[in-house]
Amino acid sequence: MRKKKLIIGNWKMNPKTLALARSNFTSIKKESGTNKNVEAVIAAPFVYLPELSKLSSATLSLGAQNVSAEKEGAFTGEISAGMIASLKTKYVIIGHSERRELGESNEFISRKIKMTLASGMTPVLCVGERERDQGMWYLSAVKTQLEECLAGVAKNAISKIVIAYEPVWAISSTQNHRDASPEDFQEMRIYIRKILSDFVSASVAESVAILYGGSVDEKNAVGFLVAGGADGLLVGKSSLTPKIFLKILKIANEIK
Ligand code: PEP
Image (cartoon, rainbow, N blue to C red):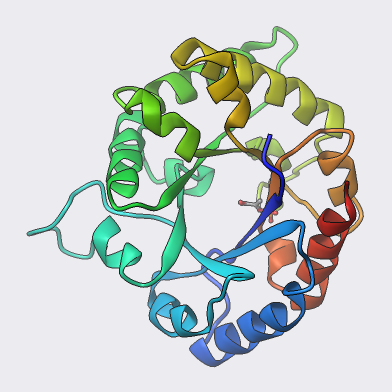
């Protein structure tokens, strides 16, 4: 289990301007320095990374929200892992449900993971079922995602990957979304570690950070971190308001 909680804000296609991105990032950075038990990250849109990389620091680092599956060349509109890494970016969110919705397959996601690792950055692999069913098929849905996305990844690289469990039914942008409970997360966290231990040793599987994501806010964060045992959080909507995101960072910082 990692010592510092990893709290990643996923800004998605926000905010509207670079000026706002700069000012929100700066507001978070100003106060995040006091949270010694937390590693805070903002995953910003590509176009903001060059400017934000000038502001990023040891206490607030940068993430990207996507990466090309290709290394370089004739791939119009794509952004390579090498380009992203050159902007002091440490993390890359890969396999987010909003990108899977656009057609990204597990095999495609797996190639992105390998590119990200090869560039020295940390992939944040998102997994999560669309629905919870009585027959518990949701467990096998997540198992398939993990197995196919991690296929061919070097065993000694598994510990460098962060897994974010994000049940699609709990994400704030999902229509009629409902809240997941810390117990929902805890069950899945244990299950994910079990699957990982089929790839690598139990001790390596134990070292992989498993985050929770899905409508996290300043009220429910503590439940996922304490009762749920999350190594950190992937925060969408609540990361867009610096005041709320800072509250979540503070809550995570106070957990022993
Ligand atoms: C996300 O989509 O990664 C996410 C966690 O969003 P939200 O917190 O808004 O549900």
